Every structure is written in structure tokens, then in C-alpha cells.
Image (spheres, one colour):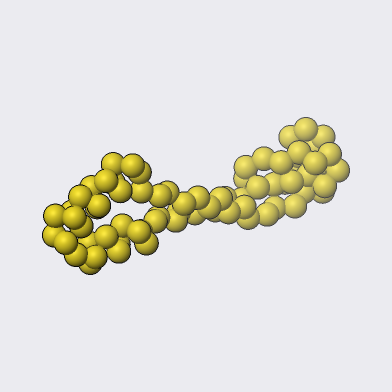
Length: 73
């Protein structure tokens, strides 16, 4: 593999993981609270408090050891 900037063969390939967490929005919280008030139970509000989704995406990045340029492989 060669660097697109300096044409060097001194390239390292690293896996890079991007992770993000999506939390429930304002209307989601209001909906769960409304359901909990109507049914007078905590069973419905507990999943709303603890529910968050975590997603991750892994991709390979090439990094030139001479000039420092990085790119997707």
C-alpha cells in the first residue's frame, strides 16, 4: 500500500471504532411519564429511565508513517 500524498510504502493500517449513544428525546420522556401517571405504576417508567442505545462502527484507516496523512482503506 502506498501513501496518496508522498507515495511512501511506510504505511500502517489501524482499526478505528466510532461509538455514540442515542438517548430518548423530549417527547419520548413525556410519553413514558404520561403512561406511568395514568397507570400509577413504576413498571412502565423504569425502562424509560434506563433505556439508551449504543451503536458502534469500525473501519480501517491507513496512516502514513512519513507524512502523517490518514485515509480510509
